[in-house]
Image (cartoon, helix red, strand yellow):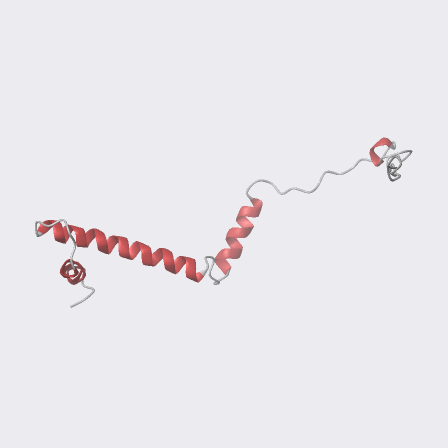
Length: 103
């Protein structure tokens, strides 16, 4: 086979004048709000609304984990109080009873 030919490339910049090169035309920078303006607008928006900002399931998992961690901490204290290091179902029951969750 012969030598490969490169496809012709168009040089889009050749001979084109940019707006900045023309006298008397200034390119305006993009509009920016002052620091804090957008934050205040977002605060007003979120205070007005009632929709949930955190998805239900991830938040539910977080709440469940926090509850269980606290319960196991109390359960461990109950086991230590009984001079044991192994937690047992009766420790969980005692911890819940002391907390007032289960009569």
